[in-house]
Structure formats: structure tokens, C-alpha cells
Length: 261
Image 1 (tube, one colour):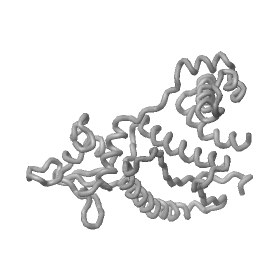
Image 2: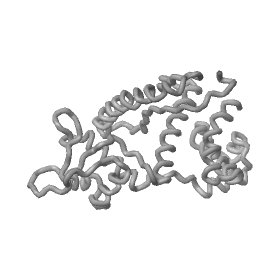
Image 3: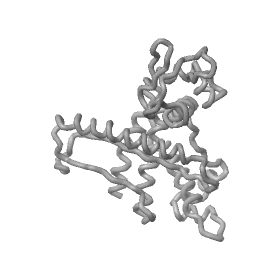
Image 4: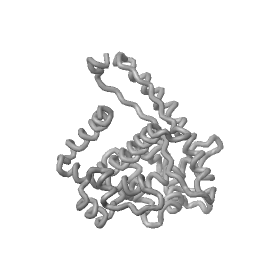
């Protein structure tokens, strides 16, 4: 339980900050446990009864029945995240949108030259429901692109929201879920094991942190872009069952506790 307690601390901080109180989280935890028990712990050849779910989870049978009747909601991708993320990815990886050195092209906002690629053309390839101007405004808002005399330049090769809480929570959800699941599956003995490594120190002087962080931001982004290009080229190339993939890097520091020192 000590492991669970420490893993829960960041989530408790998030919940308190957003005004989520214990009764609400208990109800949610019951729903999630029932959902996981049904979908991740079936017995082959047997029906998953309410009684079995109740035994596995400790959730009362009446609640199990209620949750099953309600259904289990899955979170949707915020519209602006979906479109912006797809456009930046296409700009970086889709054939014809990079220069000879592999860097994303600087695009005219709306070219009047026949056959010349422009931002509107790229945006229309991603979505016919959202106007190119609206997509551009969103990318400008989050600092992913800049306008240079009516030409659009990609300055950050990742779509990272800076203002919208819903969008930031979406990225947090994706990263936290994938990292935790990799660790959980490894604890279960999954083979081959998922890559999960960490460099951890408890007595680093504060003045050394900026240089360490710079290494991660430079070399880490190079690695992630390489993986992104490979994954983008491979997607939709097989008739096999598709897989969800997440590869991430993270950095965190805080004052070391007396116990850690």
C-alpha cells in the first residue's frame, strides 16, 4: 500500500486544486474498478457476473449493476488539440512538407502562385470542418508558429497548450496513463518488458539543474522527433490489429526530504 500511497499523492494534489472532494473520487474509483474488472479480468468461457465483479473489487453488487447500466464513458480528444496536433505532425513528417534537410517548410499564409504549397493547403488536408485561419490563430496562441510577413514558420515541433485547462489535462491524462500502465504491466511480468528507465539523485545542487534540463530538452526532443517520424511512416501500413503507442520523456525536481538525504 505504501507504493499506492506515494503514486496517489500527485493525484490528490490535482484533485484538491480542482475542487474534487472525497465523495466524488470514491464514486469515480468504484466505476473505474468495475470497468477494469470487467474488461481486464474476464474468465474464459464464463459470463462476468455482478457477484464476481463485487468479489474482485469490493464494490457492492447494486453499484456494479448501476454502473453497468450507465455504461463507462471514455474521454474525447479536445477538438483544438486533435486538429493542431495532426497539423504539426503532418508538417514535420508528411512527404513534401519539409525541405531537403528535413526541416518543416516555411509556408506562405495563402499563396497566389498556382501549385505552391501554403498553410491553407496543409490545414485543409487535416480538417475540412475547421477554417485554416482558425487553426492558424490557435497555433499562434500557443506559440507553435510565428508569422513573418505573411509566411508561417513552425518554431516548436510539438503542440503544447499554454492556456486551456482542458487541453493541458488531456496531455497529462495521456502521458500519465501510458507511463503508469507500462510500470504496472512490467510488475505483472509482461514480456517483453516495456522500456522504463529513470535517472534519480537525491542531493543535486540547484545550480546544476539548468544544464541537466537543457540536455533533456535538446537530446530528448531529437529522440522523440526520430520516433515520431518512424511511427508516422509506419501507421496504416499493416492489416494487423492497430496498437496504441506512447513514448515519453519527463523531467522533475523538488526539495529532497530528510529521509531521502
